[in-house]
Image (cartoon, rainbow, N blue to C red; front, side):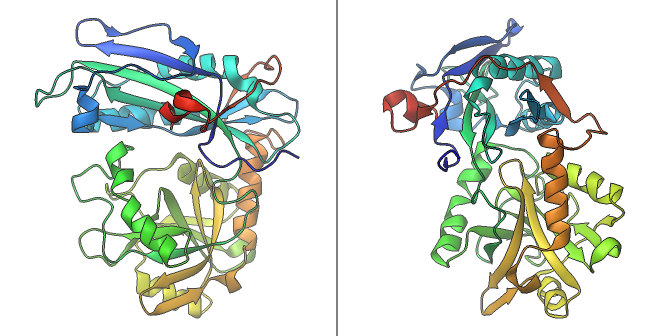
Length: 366
């Protein structure tokens, strides 16, 4: 088995690049070049004004040895939505998919054939690259796609995580950029994430920004609550209010849970309700989900003076079943009834990956 690879540390050999200008529109086809430092002006607009959006999606090694990327079309549409919110050009879905195909064709072989814990994480990013500090949307943008081989976000097993409810900070505001996947959302979350780590927790739970009462999401992941047990268990997730990210994994799990006979609904759940229903045994499981974290059980919650376990602090059967169902589609062990997987030819051999410690090229990709 391959030694554990930390998230975002083992980059592959190549990147995909595209440019957009107000005069010429989108460049096509995508360019593939060696991974390395990129030259840019000190007046690059995105560096100063934050016009930066990105996506995260994964390519998996399938049971027959081929590669499949999970729901890249859905990620392409969310990429467009994020760009629209920040007054950036929307990348056509077909061009986004062409960039994914070009990257996987060149570097898909970096994904080992003998370790199903690993996946190839793709990070498309679009940033304002015009050398101008005029206070307006930029007139030139660069699309960049890098990738790295990774194991699980928290660990290579589905170990339950501990979370801290953030009472001091808010992730987003009504009318803001909460439903866009933009760089500033993540920078603004680091202080709360640091507080969670200081409290002995792996992640932070965000509340609604107005009443500071309703549970919205966890770090960069969506949350689900399970009420009851067995086939009659109901699966509940907070509604998309405009201040939380519409996760592709969230959407997929709602579909899978309904297909497996669970009642699925969107419902606002307060922190107090979460605690009281856990103590009463009504909420039997809680799990987070996202491209990086897949499906991760939440075992313990800390909120000021309150500290409680969910389901005895162990992974519950619904969480385990949904994780297995999703992984089965990723890896070709289960039918893909919704045609979520974009298939790629067998890659030609395994290539090396670039450590983030290997000089400026590695540092430039972080």
